[in-house]
Length: 306
Image (cartoon, rainbow, N blue to C red; front, side):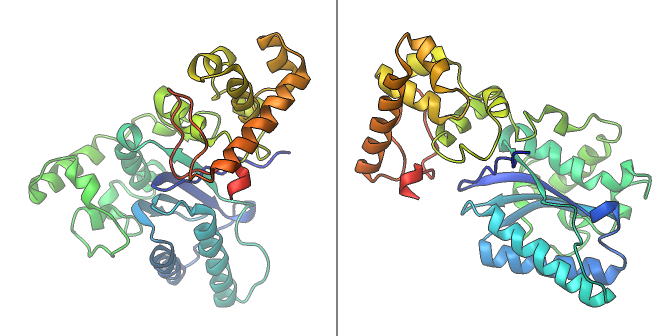
């Protein structure tokens, strides 16, 4: 089984979920919930995370987090690792607390962040644990509505700014927005290949910049669903050699497939890839050479630069 692709870059926003091993509770008491929030505060301070929404359930949690430094994996390792230690110490047990690795979906801010923030705080309502979001004390809802003090790591400004400049009116509109979400379809249904939640342009733009990294961390089938078509590589790149190299480095196509499309021998594709990688390393720039219409994220580097 291939490991899922970890999508990390500066400013990335994620919907993160982490579940208890064998579906067992990860929060037995309110003390456990306070401990988790304490660890989260430490992680946010250390890794400069901004949390847009969160919700603690019984056997899992939801976290909507922005990473200015592109360090989700490091932060999650500390969050789940340190909380597991505290949980085991409190309850005098040993072993795993969480079910494997967390699940993280890359989120487009403009299209999905607002809807996801509502989805997260409505989890207890959907589960029948409470009748309205304000009755659940272990989410960001009350903090966003100014009914409870908001910690420094919780960014309520962006969410409320979507409802106007005057804070009181914005809070009222936010309450109405959340209440109207009961029974609404999950925004996560729009997730592409269990990896990315955004419109077509967002998905294509991200993968165009991501294709020089992580190419062995996910299946070719999974990547092909979001990579450019072969003719698009040719249309967007200055030379056929660059187009062949970028198509191969996306991880979505084999050399024989690329060779057949470009009507060349597969060894020609191999030489093009080697030349492209060598040229990219020689430039020593913070991002690989760009096709005119394919703009990689400036925080990404080619493998030989990392």
